[in-house]
Length: 291
Image 1 (cartoon, rainbow, N blue to C red):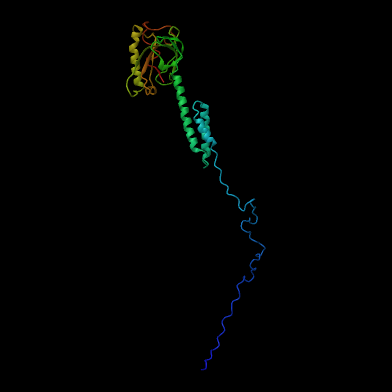
Image 2: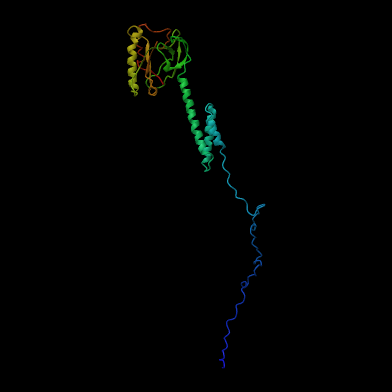
């Protein structure tokens, strides 16, 4: 059997040429135009200084700020027996707090603790000094309590029968107050003698006016029995020491009635001398005040 002849096939599209670099581009591996060659990995770029011994410089961690001042302030704040050390601690603590305002913690917590401790201890020192001054008693007394050698004492330590020097006493206007007096033996010249004492009552301070009224009345009631007779305008001067609002809060209720010779000193006691009403140049009740 004869075969059917196969028609000749049509030719296909021409084969694509192999891929290559674009027209005008340098062949692969050749340096680009201009002669610039990018650096290999780990090498510095043009104009960059290489880091010695390493491709990249190590990361520089920020150093922790010094807290030596804060620690020193905290340590000094515990040296309570040296006031100068406390002052230094306060100064260092303030300096640390000022530096910490820049946003860096230089020991702010320690500085605050030192500041509080040193401040409280200094307040305690001040209170002790005040107590020591106001309660000091360097006068000498005998077994019965009479002053045998002069000395300075707190006004609240004046006793019945004590004689002391102080010149004029303050009045109710509060221009000044007495905290200490100089006691002397009554046989020596002196300004005042404590002839009577008594205590006021009440929880709340009644006010200066009421305290003065009660104090004046109690002292005037006691003057005639002390002198042994009625008062006279040319007689001695009567005054008194009474509690203030501050001392009242410290449970002070004591009123001390005093008598003097109206501007001149007295030697010995005025008990039984029968002098009369205080001198009219000074109204009874212009009293001294205890602190």
